[in-house]
Image (cartoon, rainbow, N blue to C red; front, side, top):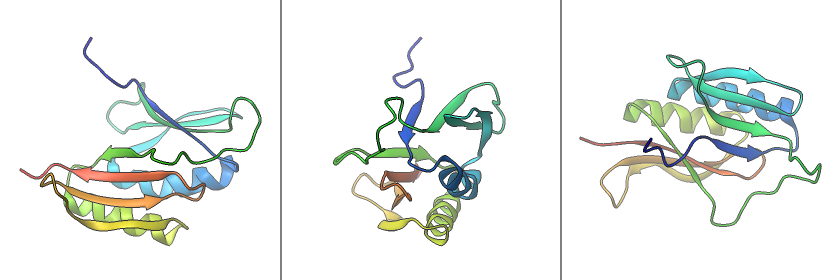
Length: 128
């Protein structure tokens, strides 16, 4: 087994509002809801329903969720167009801009947002 990350989990203070936000933007990256409880919602790839890759959750300790300074999650996109759609859909659904889509220093294509809870999320497409 050579996986470095099993899954990603971010906190939210409003699971219903956050799930609507992520439903709207993650579909551009091929992700959909695959697991739902009263505490969290898990998203997985459309072609791999049994593997949750990304969770939004109420904090386990019942304290308020806060965004970490310096923390960022980069999600994989298949195309530049998917990054563009992720980014624009996120802004349309209440996210704030953290960096418009474009080629970055490493030569790949990124778009950066802060979600409705302040978490920094990026969509990244490897440029061939």
